[in-house]
Length: 348
Ligand code: PMP
Image (cartoon, rainbow, N blue to C red; front, side, top):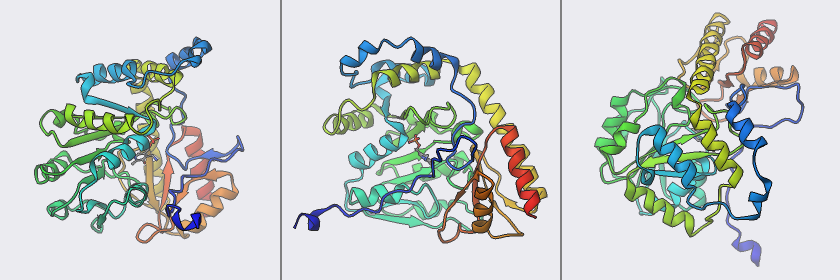
């Protein structure tokens, strides 16, 4: 009998995490460079006796550091265990109407998984033939909107005017802008949080701060929204972020110099790789993220994915309608990208 009552969900499939150290891993948009030295020192100096005690459920130290960084009040900041946790909390807190939430058909593949998990109705809005958002699609009755900018897995940035147009036309809904990749060259809508009390901007330390393993994400929004998120979080699991991670996060956000240098390196490697892929005959989208979305013209994307894997180079392939001829390639070090380009050149 109990089997009849299992919650039926098709889980999100994350990118592979191979054990082999020799793999060139360009499949999960991790940062190829280490976190800042402050993070290393925070781990070294961490008093393990702290682990006896529960961590601060309000995560005030880290929330204050994030608030200072963005020049907002601590009451405008919510943190979670990766932005996945923040987004899941947003679904749980705000997507409770009987109207469908809206998001693009090609986007982060966790959005529909949460909708299924939390029984939220949803409608996907097709991107146009150039994989761009059509703002008029979002001028319809809805129970909320979630859009990543830049989008994943395309890396394409929508201009701020498009995002403002969507927010302006949806003042009765929660609008979430998932800015997981914004640091790599796109414009943020964070300043608009002061103007729109229905806007939630979600960010992560996983990509631009090289901390995918620590699981730190956050949301910036009106105080009313943050309070509602906290009420749900405290009723679900109050001690989600451990004491060491809190220290790591504080150090990571302090070192702005290292952060900016790291971003510049990734962006310049991205531009180099973009040009090389074009030279090799790929169709490539201009990206404002730490990955490129590219379609080969001499081999199918699926075959190329397998051929590269044989050479220990892991990229991401999505066997889904509209995008099954593309590969998503995370930006690694210059050396890793050179090896990727050499491997592809040999296959031609
Ligand atoms: N949003 C988007 C668009 C992503 O691609 C990812 C990474 N998988 C996330 C959110 C979640 O990242 P994290 O939980 O590591 O913060």
